[in-house]
Length: 325
Image 1 (tube, rainbow, N blue to C red):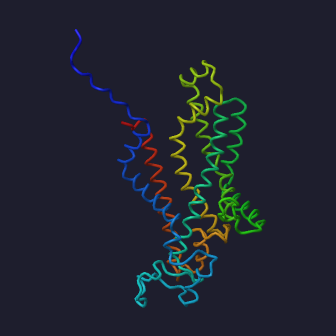
Image 2 (image 1 turned 90 degrees about the horizontal axis):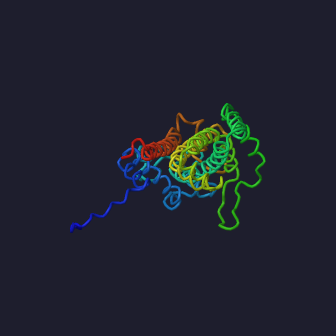
Image 3 (image 1 turned 180 degrees about the vertical axis):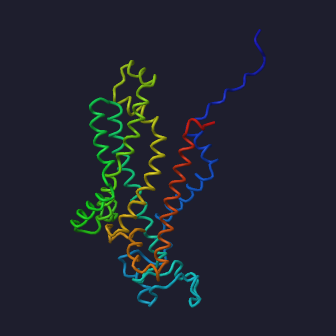
């Protein structure tokens, strides 16, 4: 006899991304990091609209100098200034507004972080995938090359190559023909060199994941069904690594920003691109008297790197299968 009771509809199981997002929302540190990162991107994209002064080399960027406001402390710390919002972060020894310099430097920070990460992860994925999937002598050769990059004194080689290649730069800015956007030539060279020396550790991690996943049963089943190596890599292995790649990418962005700031602070950056590290380098000699020109760019670097690290840790916990509920 058939039952008259209505069958309850089966609930669809949540996808990996839905579960990860639910877990991430409960991670207060990760959400705080996401807020910081979103604020950095908003400032980099729209900062020129609310910055008090234009970006250098526009002559109007030196308007405080023409007005005699050189080495002025933050207006909210100077009792002689009636306008408490005029120079929010003070002015530099060369007569520029620190607040405007920090705002305009944000776009270069995003440019460095994203481009270094894209190039680094592309190299890491290609080399790690080939080494992990094919193994044998291919794996041995690629991993020996990676070990050479790992044992190099990377910062020293970066500084040497940056100085060599930036000296050959002709035009300070390169205009992209189709979208008509100017990119700093010297800073782009710095980005390429940073990416070239920082792919090895990520490639070893991806190679290890390929070695693990290629031995799983569903990969063996695909081979038995006659799937090509290309299909196995791009349709089955890489999608299973996507969560790990996202986490590593966020941490790589933070590391790239910090490394570029170090290179610029040491005097090897692009003088035409006013990055936060370049601001620190310009004002370091007068740090005792014009301390605000060092403190605020340093805080910007600290908060940005801190935000990306918190975001990376939050994503790592969200995608961790051992913690997933």
